Image (cartoon, rainbow, N blue to C red; front, side, top):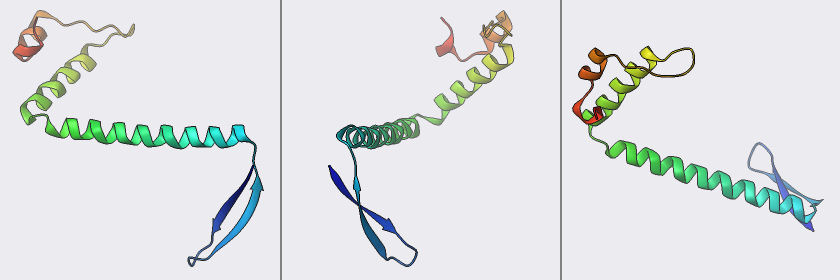
Length: 94
């Protein structure tokens, strides 16, 4: 398979050149481009979802993350004391 690639040069000019590429490389490049586009779409969707979360809920999650970081042990376990548990927003208590 022969592809025509364009080398962009400063000033808007371009120089085409032909490159012989095997089918596996082409499919790998297509897959990489598709994966990158899907990841970007997922990131944009997640950013949109996070933007819709009310400020109060974001604050609650931030508080929970701070407590978890403070109490995280060396073995990566997280322990809450009774005082910390009571200070958490109601929706995090079980």
